[in-house]
Image (cartoon, rainbow, N blue to C red; front, side, top):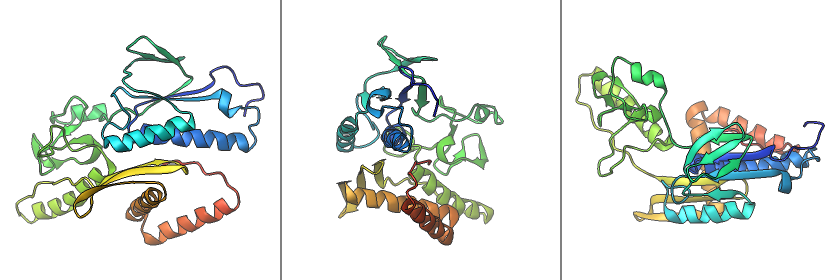
Length: 277
């Protein structure tokens, strides 16, 4: 909203990490910036002044998701005009942009780090509990920390074994949700002196939202035990339904219904939509 013209490169954005978070953010920024321009920021030329670069160290975006989902998402991002750099490891984040290991420099005044999950440093000082290189507390299959069975850890701060896989349970919302439900049962069993059951993670698949334009996903074992690839209107419906389920889990049915009604009325007044979660 500044009075003067946009400086060269002022509205260039570099997003480091093309997992679900970085990918969704790139699509949302594309739409949001154009909505802002349409609502009065007419000194900004969206096509010339705004540049969004998505950087991923792996050989493809969405490396944790099925390749078919990644291919379709990449096609949509490029149609939007988002510049995608894969196989590009970041060596340095500077005040004026990002330097890649190859020596290339991506000029950007705004850099968003969306690559990976790391626990806070305070976890390394908690009574000598075992942590991994990402500062996550190492836990047993029962979600108990390895050096103190009276301490449990779940969610992104925990490195939980995943039988049959080389890596731990992925730091995803569905994993944390399942761990929370399991921990509630585990604590009740512990207080009653009953044996604790190991946590078993079930991957229900993934949905990637690209704003109002599209959604793409892969549902695990959805039909007769087979994976189902979805996109378009069905994927958007599934994504919105999943979001509403999260809202109800946090706030309850009535508050979720009231908030949904309020958002519906505000959109009818012409309020621009900006995703904030």
